[in-house]
Image 1: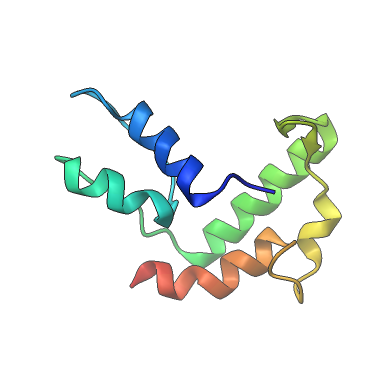
Image 2 (image 1 turned 90 degrees about the horizontal axis):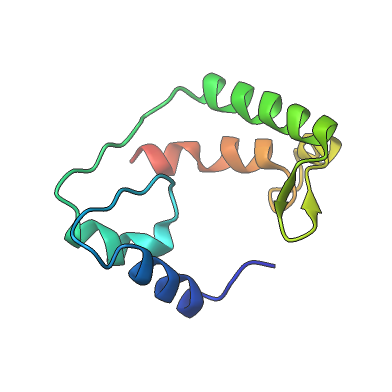
Length: 103
């Protein structure tokens, strides 16, 4: 389970409190905090095939290495092949949200 919107907002505000900061990621929940203060935004509009390939490769590598993602969570590669379950599968999430993220 992720952090609440309020907790994430507090963390992001604290991390970007100074004049010089950089962020990477696509958390829409942070955009109202960071975008008005940013002087430059770089949006990478990557092709869907590249996004899916990278998700699969990264998930396969993390699953094999048992890399800790946060807390005690580790990647489970086969979960991402459940294309019918967008909440569990990063592949399904990438495919179903790619078009709206491009807009």
